[in-house]
Image 1 (cartoon, rainbow, N blue to C red):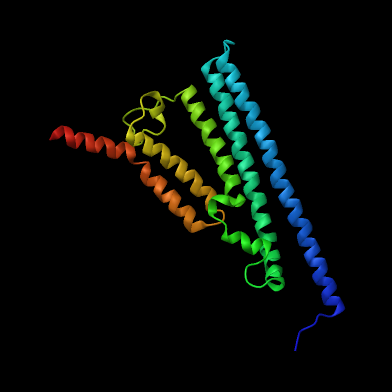
Image 2 (image 1 turned 180 degrees about the horizontal axis):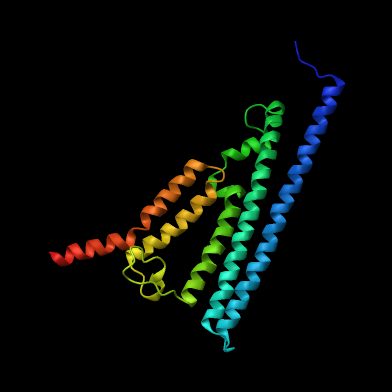
Amino acid sequence: MGCTLSSDDQSNLDLRVSYLKDCYGFYIQHINSMFNFFLVATGLFANAYVLLLSKDYGIADGAKSAMCWFAALVCLIFLLIHLGTRRDLDAVESALRHHEKTLFAGSQGFLTAGKRKPILMRLKYLFPAAYLSFFLAFTLVALWQNPPSIPESMPFKGLGWFTGPLTLGEAASCAGLASTAWGAAVAQWRPLNGLRFILVGTLLQFGPTVEKIVAAASAST
């Protein structure tokens, strides 16, 4: 015997679904609009930097580096705004997914079917990856434009490798920074996966130290 809803229950259900749909549309539009603004802002920063490199305006390297640092900060702010909005959207999608399961058998719904997509095709991960990529790009350019002076005696040479040729250990350190930053972003939705990226990134930071130990061992033999 089938289960039927009373008129009041049906009205509440319709109101709930309508509310969730409106919230879903609002957050989706907000995410897309912010990403469009982000592309415009980063395009202006990149164009300004290329213009400064192509013509001699007498601007010091420190000023160019400061502009890149500011661009990286803007990218980071956009990333944080996106992550906050994405968490709200996840809550809306979770509620809508519950209603989809009552309407469709198996995973035939729009939201439930999205879980079968490869991870690199999910906008949930592509948008943060884009924000993070631009943030890292502007950060690297800023460090390259005006390299910091870091003593060689420090346990972690850090980003001082911009002052000279890039070695294998220093490349591992750079990859470790990217892995750690990406892990921090992924941890918003998948804490365990994010922790793995952070752990790998932390281990890669020992690249320059391991390289020196290997070089010292080779020299002693």
